[in-house]
Image (cartoon, rainbow, N blue to C red):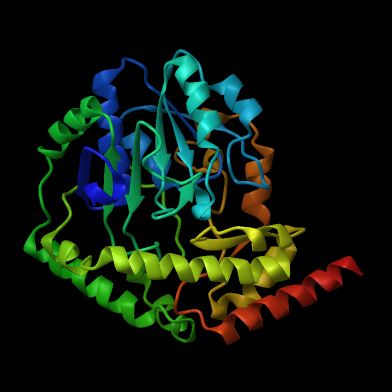
Length: 355
């Protein structure tokens, strides 16, 4: 993995949020600043990791067309208290790393890439997750390549690598009982990932499928030997997975978003904004059996446990995305008939909207 990423520092841990936590703990040693700037619409695991590290969460609204930061707002948000900016490649869509790194260099802040949904993706030939001071990937369910759960923290900086290694040395591997639970979970998910069987894991509450959870008390462990074994041939699996995701993205783009059909993005899921929350809900209900799903239910500012910190603050683009977004499956178990059925249904809906 070090060779593939071209990095000097790499740590394998129990989840993507554990990888982000490890990076943040390392950066805390290197700077007295304590604010972490992140998109107002992102996975709740990101603010959970920031809270777990004892740092302050600062939000910046996003561009609903690119899911990247609103860069004019970002320039007004990053200041002398900013430890780092978390640049997120949401759904595998690359953030504008050149613009973000230039801004942070001018302000003396680190940049951390959230490449949890973008492993193997590139921008201008550069591997996402390895462009900034540090980055992290996820090996969780539904990711570009998975062993059920796991995370990878990477850095090119010898200074950050040393600080990460000191944090990593304090982590324990999972117990035998925890490893057995992980294996059974992976087994259940591997059986039920196909769209025709989505109803089965949906009936297993312990899998917590479709839930978006803010939990700063998440486990932080080393990656287990069992998970490492399940990751064998990861590089070939990643290539096959991303090739499929590129083709799926082009298919959906040609039908639903013409500009997207010309890109070579390995979409983790293909994002589509509807014209209203009601239309989104009806679309989801009609196509849920084929793997069409919702994403994060609210902006980060509306998470109940931390809402008090943003009283009076509004993030309208993030709210619009939370209210109207559906995402389409792109993985290798989605068949051509599945894709055709999804596209046909959505095209009919859009025709109805236009009339």
